[in-house]
Length: 273
View: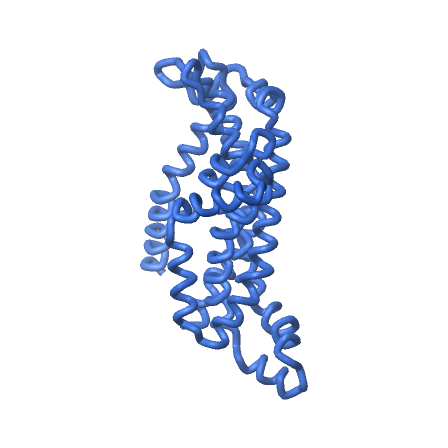
């Protein structure tokens, strides 16, 4: 009993040690977003101000057209994630069932390749097609990021699903599509959730493709935050507020789906054990 308690304490300490830097940075960013510039420049630093500067959040939406850029991010991320799931889930199932390890390695290489490697040829292609400055190039380029993630996650998810259920469905007269739709997909739902969350995170936070391919009216939120930087004056309050606005949707989505994420990530470990 004592050894189990010590292990729990040690585990809690290790987890706290790993996540504490992220928590401290988040709290400091929140503090910056709620302070006036006088308090942000004060020394020693002030963590909790006497008066909260809510105008930093209001000013972000009023002066920087964050409403438009927020909608752009929703459209780009939503379309890129939906297309990635439509392509990646069946592809992951096919690779897992055919045991196409070479194809899986190719997918992994595509995921590890820096996005800048694709940027120049895609830029020239979209410029030739006359699509520069629209949301279409950003959606297509985000597929370069999201599709390999979804396929790689789904390969692991489908490899852990029991083949006996699919074989029983085939014996009962189901074809391959019916087996995939009615047997494999429901079982792999935790893996689909993980793939969805990761695709949303990587697409939502992508900066490189947006800063090159976006026009004045089609910028996404990471690009909009970057454009708030100025050599003349750097306002930490509005900048921190904008960064929190960018982070909030992904953070909320992750918290709401944390059970499914844990189930999807641990499915393979349970199966192997």
